[in-house]
Image (cartoon, rainbow, N blue to C red; front, side):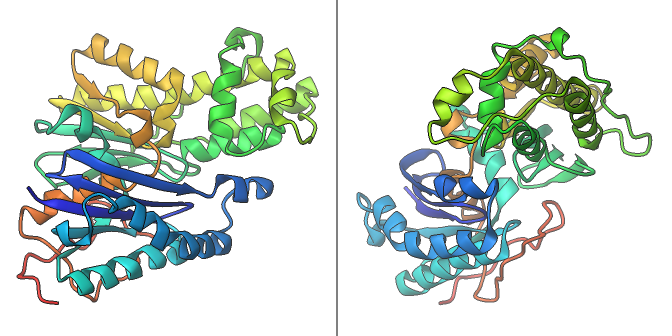
Length: 360
């Protein structure tokens, strides 16, 4: 029974979790900075780093409260991609714990962690597989021919899907983060009442790439043509959102449908070409109600299993990092003290954990 502590600080969530045998979540503690960054309309890197420093010790202590430090067999930590200052906090803490406890250190790619967010409900998966990761900072499609082997088929050419949500919400005065708010408003809007001049792009030399810049332009053009005023500022955001006019609700529905159609059309194209045994999904945008429904419909239409993680594991968390770290640990892989934060780390070309005996 190997027990791994996961630590995640790639952006604005200070998270720690204890996972047993890579599947059983013993604890999953998250300290969110959402309210701190909300007035700025997005994450401020310097503030995020300082908040990680303040929260790190308490979050880890909460995660290991039941198992204790002596019960840990490894420390898994996100070392990229992400905000360099935020990554440094988590990685430094993980190194110190690894040294003090004399247990292996496993550096985990943040996106690889999202791939493992489905194991808690579904267990292991068969190969070959496809993986669609959709979050505020990433929109990527991967091909997995074998375990811990990743080939990036496509990525966003501009904004990630979650970033497009946030920017659209900002233009409408909806607040931050924009994804959940737009999703909620879209459920009471009609797409045909706010037609956008937009078609999901097909890039000839990169058929699995994504692009949302054209959609953002279409939204901005519609806002100007229809003279849609953003919602006013105010202390009671819930009351203001509840009174959102129909034109904003219709635009939210139309925008959301365009994002989902873009994601599904690329994924469907890849399923036809690669014929995977299973499709994995992950990332905060996978919480979106329209996307979850579209993925379920695609699974039925294409006859392929699509694994959609529980909402609590779609956003950044440390349980997924611990699960991914466990997969490397059982293969005898671990990192040494030379591991550094890698803010632009790319899955599939990143430095793998070194398969060597652990030496403190």
